[in-house]
Image (cartoon, rainbow, N blue to C red; front, side, top):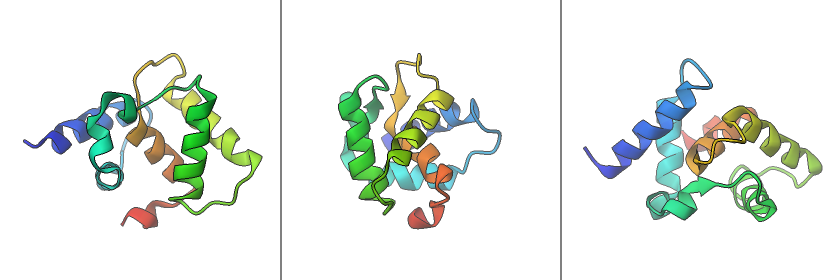
Length: 112
């Protein structure tokens, strides 16, 4: 089993806590799109209390990858996703956060 498969297994387990039928292909595609950063512990996790982290998610993923317009609504979506994931959960995987945001905005086709 490859390291990617092991990581995707962790992501699936986290998503199953929030939804019954996770889109495993979407999770894998998002993980693949992130390249080697998923293997770096610091880069692979999201700190929900760090506003710089929110800026990174907003600029690099929501605007840069999903092609959304910059607005205050983006912060609301990030907050909703982090609440769903559990703000007290210290190990929020970036891939899972991006997965939830992708589904929130119905942008799955970007990874197909």
